[in-house]
Image: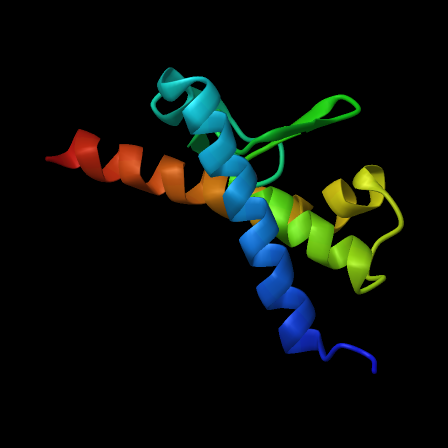
Length: 105
Ligand SMILES: [Zn+2]
């Protein structure tokens, strides 16, 4: 029987989360070491992150990317990066707004 979309998402969540736990077991520091995620532009822990060609994705984005692949929304990491460009712009705009707010205070 074919898995439903919900089942696919649930399975994938468990797999990706387990990867993060494995990373933390192997290197406890990776939970607190941050890097700028190529996909969401946020600072994220190294634990559970994955390098895809020249991009490093945080654990959340790995899940979204793997799901996008599995559900055939994108063909590869380059396409995923293109589709998520708006998201990164949004995040950057939020940072700028927050900086402006801080300046005003
Ligand atoms: Zn991310």
